[in-house]
Length: 547
Image (cartoon, rainbow, N blue to C red):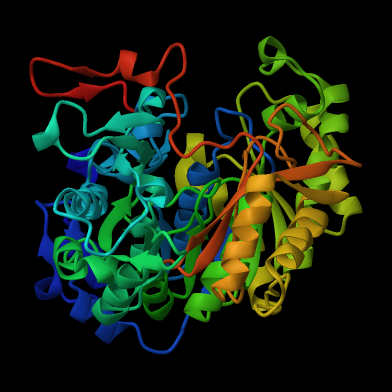
């Protein structure tokens, strides 16, 4: 594909970034130096179109494909558009979903490079995270001057891979010279608080302040210990100096794309960096921002966390749906998902209806985009279109996977029209509300829950956060993306259920409180047949199997 691309300097210049203002990573990708991004990010110019989804199947419904197609469709209509995406984590790339740079004729290029490490940002985040972990254990080994209670340390190691065997480990074995033995573990880098910090920071000063606020544990008398107490901030920030700079690439049709940061939405807040989004809004008429997973995760967190921190507004929200997901939520089995099933689609529409309600609750104008698959039957598509008309919601079919930007022109027209009639996006709760009240607002209004249950550990966590004055922060709910509930097996639109909060953790650097719900884990595992088995390096240097 690289032969049909424009040099990235040309892509940047069309967006208004001078060619001599880039740090090039070869011919096709570049970083926008921080001082340039800051200078160009003035007053907001463009409209922000948030791309969210209905509850997906484990294989995804083409949200990234649709976001990329929307950006290309807007360009075909003569608008200056830019797409803001998260960088793919190599855990899912090698796992069940594959890469996150689109597919078919709706991709971001160079796709393989983007999926397999890109410009090294995630690696830098992992190094900064693990540097702090090493400093913590060295402090314990060297005498523990701060009096850290090692049983309260909540700063695990990290790596950008799905590896369930590392969720719970014991470190420091081998002898006196090998450190202090204690229980530890690993989380995937997309779940690291350093990732969230990078994506929410305004500048270097804000980055350093947030890194310094990270709480790694407590003393024996309950006093919090921060990264600043361990004198780790300068080194961590230095590792992240270039990682804070947005990356610019292009779609397969030459539309500019800013890819920066990659927090998961089922664990963290799930959207690209504020630096990249503000840059996109300053340079384009329309800035297409993809939020992770469905409206109960990415969209809610974008409004309640990202919009608050970045002073942003969502002008329109596109809900990506697929006939396959509607079949799934209507009760079709895995073997039936690729077979026409109007009855299952009809039943599955209740799930889509809830996500339409959610977007309306959050304030933006919703649009439904049906990402068309080859096995979609016309009567199934008609059911979805009629449902959306009954809801008074704009509807469009996207064939961007097969037709590129041309297959998303109607989608782009609907999105642009909705954005012109934008309404203010509305947070669900005031920041000064008690943590429990915030959790209940999300659970009731967005998930449709009847109530919230708390484990004994969670109740103790809440007492500690209240005593430390960590109430006035947004809540970041960590739960399964496969259901509106905290149980991945509850499909469709469940009713009369409670959700369970197992633990509550203060991410004091990121500036939000994380609630772990149900059986959510911070280190995913690989499936029985991972995508990695199909990735090959040919003798001529060509990589195949990455999708």
